[in-house]
Amino acid sequence: MLESTGLYEESALRRYQLGARQVEQHADLPAELFGEDAPMSTPETAPEIQQEIERTRERLGETVEELAAKVDVKARARDKAADIKAKAQVTAADVKAKAPATATEWSGRVRRSQVVQRRWPLAVVAGVAVVGTVAIWRRRRK
Image (cartoon, rainbow, N blue to C red; front, side, top):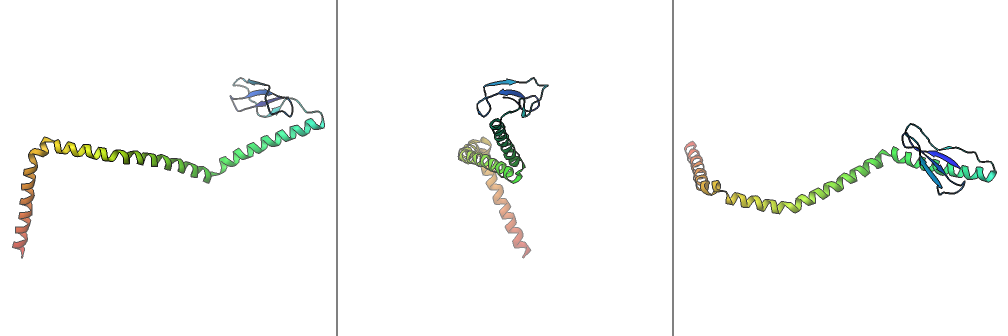
């Protein structure tokens, strides 16, 4: 039996014995030709007809299952959300693992900074001056 299968630009011919699941020969069709489950020979005996009916039912069942999966928007959205959640968890774990080392690195940079080492006394004096000014201002208001 010969059968054409495929999509636009992806069609092929298959040859197999009627009732057998294994393909004997397979040939891709040129891109301009289209084939989609069109049997190229007709069964002649009752057993051949019954086998062709069974094969058609199997193909139809597979097609229905594929369409049902595509139509099930909730399941597809759930799967997509699960994928995104898993990726986010991996990223969060990576960030969490790197955070202590990054914090230590930046802390060391700040401690080693010459600007911070030279100006911290000035910052302390400015802070004391601000606190003192606020304290004097409050006393005078009373």
